[in-house]
Length: 49
Image (cartoon, rainbow, N blue to C red; front, side, top):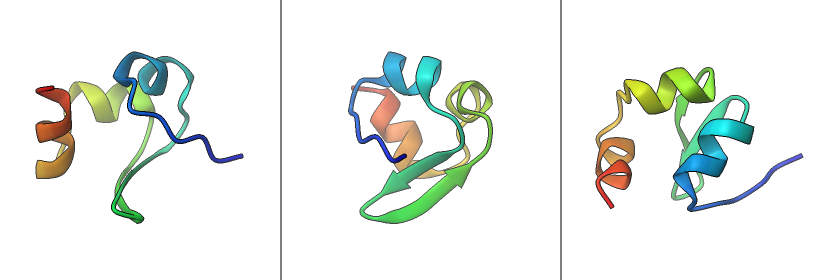
């Protein structure tokens, strides 16, 4: 199942593996780890909102 959200807490707590940006996989990994230490510039920017 694919769920689209802009709620960072929901993505962190309920997401599983992938962060998409403009329809492209920007990062893949455990959601808590990806959000704690994002590698992609887009995800780092998204967190600052």
